[in-house]
Amino acid sequence: IRNFKVDNFNVYSDNYNVNKNVNISCSASNLGDADIDFVRAIFTIENDEGYKKTYEKPMNDDGSVSVDWIPEQIGKYKISIILKDYLGETEDINKVIEIKDDTYEYSFSATPSEFINLGESINLKAYENDALEYSFLAEKGNEVKTLRDFSKDNEFIWTPYESGKYDL
Image 1 (tube, rainbow, N blue to C red):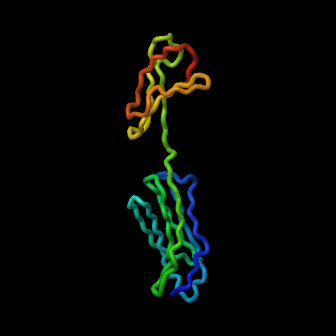
Image 2: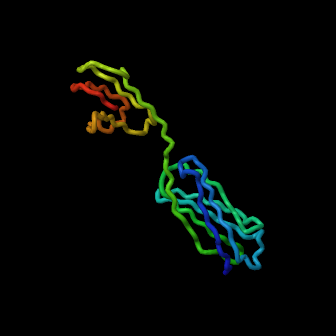
Image 3: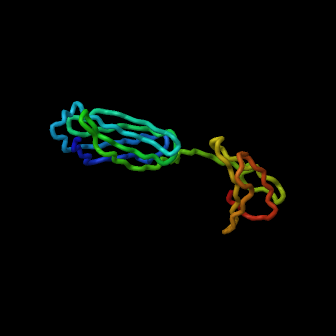
C-alpha cells in the first residue's frame, strides 16, 4: 500500500451558489517511487438525495490536481478525494459544503403606487420564479400585518380600512 499523503485539500467558490463554479483541488507528497504519470486523483461529489458525480484526473508533475464543478441543485454535498496508482490508494478525505441559491431576482408592484382613499383597493403583485409561494405584508409604524399568507398566487387585492402610511 502506498504512503501517499494529501497535504492540502481545498474546496473553493466565491459564493457557493447554484450554477456557480466550485474549484476542488489537492496537492500530495510522499509519492516515493510512484511514477507520477500513473497517480490518479478521484474526486467524488455526493449528497443524500442520490446525486453522485466522480472525476478522475492524473496528478500534475508538481503533485497537484484540481477540477471545477458547477452545482445545479441546492443542498449539502460531501466532496471526497482519493489518490491511487496500481499499487494502492490513500484513505478517503472529505469535506462537506452547502450550496445555496441566492440568485433570485424579484420585483413588486402596487397599483396605484401612491395615495388612495380609505376604502379603495390596491392591487399588489410580485414577479418571481413560478415555483415559489408569495406572502403579502403591510407594515404601519412598528406593526406588521399579514395581508395574505403564503400561496402560489402572486397577486393580491387589498382594501385598507384604516388610514395611515403603509410599507408593503
